[in-house]
Amino acid sequence: MYRLLIVDDEPSIADGLYNLFRSADELSLEVYKAYDGLEALQLAGRLRVDVLLSDIEMPGLNGIELQRELCRIWPKCRTIFLSGYNYFHYIQDSMRGGALDYVLKTEGDEAIVEVVAKAIRHITEQSQYEALIRDAKDQLTVAMPMLRKEYIAELLNGEATTAASRRSQLSALDIPLEAERPVMLAAARIDAWRTEMAPKDRALFHYAMNNIFEEYFAHSYRIFHIAYASDRLLWLMQPAREDPEDPEQANRYMTEMIESVQSACKTYLKLPCSFIVGGRPYEWDELSAAVERFSLLFGRGLGQGPEMILSDRRSSGEERQDRQERSAVQKLKLLAQCLDQKQPQKFYRLYDEIMSPLAERPELQAGVALEAYHSLASLFLSHLNRNELFQRFSERPGVGRLLSYEAHDSFAGMAKYFRSLAESLFAESEDETRTVSNDVVERVRAYIGTHLDGDVSLTRLAESVYLTPFYLSRLYKQQTGQSLTDYIIDIKLKTAMDLLTGTQAKIQEVGAAIGYDTPSYFARFFKKYTQMTPQQYRDLHRKP
Image 1 (tube, rainbow, N blue to C red):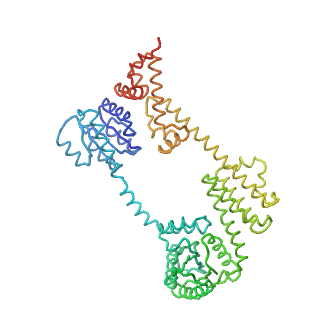
Image 2 (image 1 turned 90 degrees about the horizontal axis):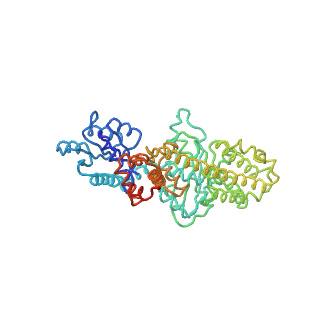
Image 3 (image 1 turned 180 degrees about the horizontal axis):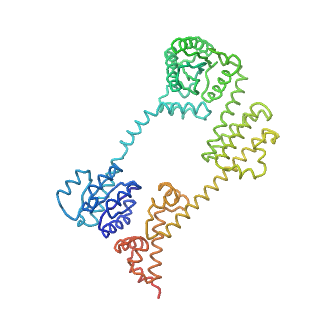
């Protein structure tokens, strides 16, 4: 919806044009008026102005000066000048100042409406597809490295994907990996930063390490790297050749090449580093568990020593069970997002997917089952505290089961409890949203009822309930099934009808009571929706 600001130092003209455009529903305008240039600038300081319809000759700040100041605030504003005089120098000055058009007051309502409609078409054309796409592409180019990192980080955090969605994302982000093929992994830990290095320089050395890595591997592999901690780098790799590699041979080759990478980092960058090489190619849904396994290897046994090169190689049965359980626990953090974004169906689907492999180990007092309990308890406690719900829920029976794993007699009982808690939170959120939305609707209606003779524009109504105009419009339609504009029209018509048939008020007074100061514009509005003039309606429905 566009905004039109009408400025004229003759109140009768400003009021008349104001009512004319408020009844021009086909233009979808929010209309505002001012009686001089300074008042117009004050309005422009609060509200975006898309079209300025202004008299040229005004005391104080004239139209051309107003245009100059207003366009400094809102550069995309289109200006149309009004004048009662067909003077060439006015037209010339206004066009030089960037005015879109010029119309004489004597040309009548139809000509003025048409020139404003032309301005709206001009704005729409100027902000169309090509300009928006060009700007978006420029911004995307700048943001692309961060977008790539965020997407791979989501995969490493256990975000579920399909081959089709991966293919689309990898292509869109220009990541040189194939969605259907497994990936080899290599990870690096910087064992000690150089003492003279400032923290801001570390990202530069991450890129330098990657350059060394790619010098040794880029001829044989497609590679993507990510810094997933201040001292950790991870490389995702796929053979450049399509024919399958022998896993044992690939692992030996990578380990030998990593020795050269490690030596180059020490020689050229003065950075001692340790590395882990994945023991086999990993499917995409295994990445989260594999990276967590790498972190464990770095933190215990030989991995605690400096400048180590390790390989993650275990029996297939041990690896499969551990992979499923670690992947499940890793995905628990994704549940918090579903709670915060009020996505119950996605939460339940993910929750059941996580609990299924963990349920095979029913003991709650040890291992991953105990870790799962504490992760869930922390997740729910954090959600309750952030949303100021803990006090309310602490008064309900069974809250002790959230605070102590000893209150659960089995893994299945614990899983059922947390699912039930999620159901309560989603129900609570839905009730609260419904209550708040209904309250907003009632407050808006109350405001309209007491300000029907004044400003009931969408912008003013949104300000009264501290929302944006767009969100208020959408919320009102969702809650009532009726647009806010239609509701205002209905209330104005009903009020006018009641005053016409139930009081002795003059037609002009009835129009003023619903915001139309000019009788002709009130008559036009009333006839548009009733097919009768106000007087005809009064004569037909007047009570004897």
